[in-house]
Length: 334
Image 1 (cartoon, rainbow, N blue to C red):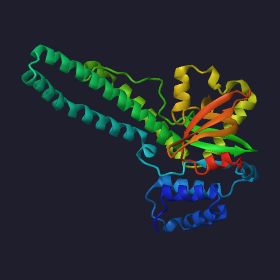
Image 2 (image 1 turned 60 degrees about the horizontal axis):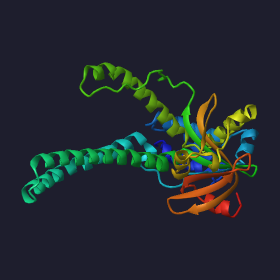
Image 3 (image 1 turned 180 degrees about the horizontal axis):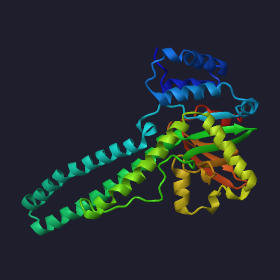
């Protein structure tokens, strides 16, 4: 008898969170495995621990029961490479970009030959023109790759870390970022960049490996945490507890107070609007959406207007992947 995998456990817990199945059914299903653990072929110890977490989800105390009266909207579309491993997604995009860059070089050489031998353009001019075009092409490819990676990460990866939560008729946006608890990989060092093949690069290798391990450990922790919808509820509790102590740390900047560049990035890039809040437990993205209104929607994204605490107009753009959140905002039936 094989243990259930993480995806199967996550799907059952998510279905219970969203009301598709009873929480008691999840408990009975999980208990069946746990009671017969001696007969279970455990292939993934992390998944086995995750199963126990799924069982604890079904036996929350009364306080947790009240918390789960909150309505939560999480990403409902299929998880792709970026959601599973953004680092690999970035690497693949970079490789594709390099291939596109290199594929242009033979075309550029043919163009120089055409200009020189067919049109009679001086060889030195052709050479300088070719060098100029190559530099422009290189910069365009580099800019394009970085832009596409950022936008794709925001739309695919960050949306997975985002949830809309309705608590006592108030709509919030919560994003899960790096934890502040110790993972055993912490370092005060930063990545050191040095010329490829140089002695400085070799000397910096141990430092860069340690930094990379720390980043990967935190990314893995976030990916595991965001698979459990209850993590978003806990995050909202954490944020609101901090705001009770210090309300001044959160302020949704209205559109009228934003600079042109800031307005572009915060209101035109998907899932970029939430304000960063650091608690003793973790770093989060957060928005309190007062009187939210849908002003634009298509298959890829939707745009909201909402009021901040002073009643000023704010705008935020999100990936259109959160179930029926848009329809419920329009119907005022959150």
